[in-house]
Every structure is written in C-alpha cells, then in structure tokens.
Length: 216
Length: 216
Image (tube, rainbow over all chains, first blue to last red; front, side):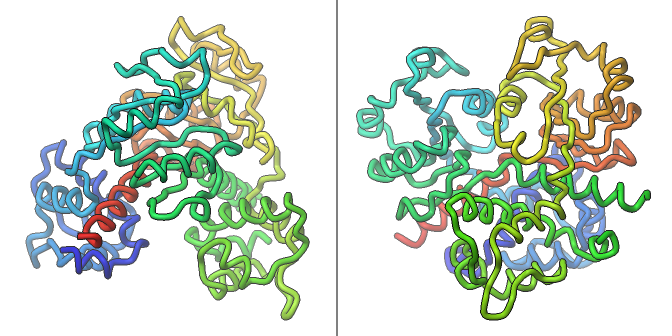
C-alpha cells in the first residue's frame, strides 16, 4: 500500500475527502451500492473522472455492479488515515479556535482534541468543549506527557512562524494552518496544510459577476 | 471581457485567488515586477502553469520582462470582482459566524458586512464588530431596505435548506455556505460555494500517514 500511495498525485488525494463525504452520506442514508454514473451525477463530476481517480488505488468497482458504498467509504477512509485516531491540539482559542473545538464532526473522523492553548489571560482556564485552555508556557510539559499528532493554528499571522517553529521543535507531525501565513519555508519535517478561507469567497464573487454580465 | 470569462474553466478561476494573495504580498513588500519562474517557485507550481493560466485572460506578461506585480494583481482582482464592493450578511452568529465577522481581510477585498442574523435570544441584540445581531424574523424588512449580494451561512446543517430557500426568495445573489449541507439542488438562480473545512484536514492526515510509512 505504501508503494501505491507514493505514486498517486496530491491532486487526486485532494479529491478523496470529497468522495469520502459523499459516500458517508450515501451510507448513512442506507444506500448499499451505486454506479459510477450515479455517483458522478451526485458529485457533479464525470464518471470517467471517478473511475480514473479510484483506479489509482487499485479500483474498487466491478463492471455492471458499481461500487459497494460502505466498502469504498472504508477504503478511502483508510487511505486518508482517518482510522488512525490522530490526536490534535488547538493553538489560539479565539472565535475560530472555539468554532473548531466545538465542531463535532472531527471526532467522528478520528481526530481527538486533547489540548487547547492560548496566551490571553482572559481565555486561559476557560473550558471549551470539555477541555480547559492552557497557557502556551506549559506546552513543553504537555508534549513531554502527550505527543499530539496535529496542531491546529488559529492565531494571528505575525506570531505564526514563531509558534510553528516551536511546535516543530517539540515534534508535531502536521500543522493545519489558519493563520494566513505560508509556513512551508519556516518549518521543516512537518506536513502543513494552509487554509485560506477567503479563496472560495473570491471564487463566489467571480461567479456572481459573471452571472450579472450574462444577464446584461 | 464577458465573452472571455465565459470560456475560462472554473478550475483556472479557482486558482486565481491564490495568485491574487501572492501578488498582494509581493506588492506589499514593494516588489515591482517578477518573472514567471520566480513567481512559480514562490507558489510551488510550474512556470508553464502560470503562463497558461494567465494566458486565459489575454496574458499579462512580457517576454524578458516578466509580470508587473501591481498591474497583474489589479487585473486579477478585477476578474474576481473584488472591486465591486459586495455587500454581505452573516446568518448564524455562533463562533464561526463571529470569527468571520471579525476577520478584517474581507473588508480589504471589497466585502462589506452590513448585517448579522440569528434566532438565538442570547445572541440577538449583541454587537459584533460594530454590527448589532438582528433576529431572522426581521430579514424580509432588511432586504426591502438593503439588497445584500452575498449571504454567509454559518448555521447548522438541518436548517440550511430552509434558510437558503428563504434567502433565494428574497433575491440573494450568492451563498458562501459553511453548513456542510449541499445546497445546489435546493436553490436555483443563486451562486453557491460550499466550504468544507475538514477536507484539508483529511489531506493532512493522509500526508502524515504517508510520511510515517516512508520512515518505516
């Protein structure tokens, strides 16, 4: 499996979470199997795209049968590592950090929140979703006892590099970065996913402008 | 311009916000021009991808000169409709809604927040970033006076369809949807961008798993 994964482009990998979401919904609504055509319609992509993507992992479909929904969902979950019970911490207990801490779906997908950190004395000591916010000063100690896999950075841009380097030195494996600061250059040996919320808002305003243009 | 836009695939459009972000950063750090090679390195894509993408809009580069940073940034901003001063409202003043309301970068990119709505009596009447949260009951009246362009949905999945249909009937042009409910089928004539925060988290756990596999 390791070998196979290595050859799959990240472009395909980035499409897998979407497959996973749709398949989870289908599974939850009791659907046992689905044709690639029907799955394609639901997801608004082409059936050949779906077949191509899933073939990268050996293919799960059978000619004339389609896909077994729960098998395919489980297989994609395995590829994405959703069954590995990743431990996570949140750095920054502002509105966004709190929103993420309260977001129940993460638990379901194997992300277990084990710590929340901040430096603001008004926030440290508060309980969010059952977890008491700790001061950043205690993070070394925390890492000595527990080795979180993923840090969720919901902190301002100007402190992001410093905090990311600190986390890297403590042995964090991945950073889910909401800070709007590109961290790829700043830290080595840590996987990083930058989240840029406003990118899709900009796409939306393009679509609105285009529609207006067409109606003229 | 309208004709040109129509032919550009949404795949290319979705890459423009990223160009816009990088060019804005370059501009703010005082860089006047950049070669496609240097821009490519910074953005971790190929130079030919950049040339290809920007050629869709007539091309902005000059052989041997590269790109004029501020011209290119302004042109992409125009394409994305960032100079049109879109008015926005937020539906759902929970943690995520509040995080977005307080996010300063939106104003800079031409999104003007003019209203926040909720149904929770503990939240209605509170002031967030200078805007008093109104009850959803008053939204008809609000639309009669002001015609917001974009609604940001930060509400639970189970009420998303109902609210989206309401907004569509009132004439909203676009919905930036954080509700984890696919709304494309539910509303017609409204542009929708669904935001699935956890997709990039799933990609991150894939990368972590892959790295672990390699180290074995």
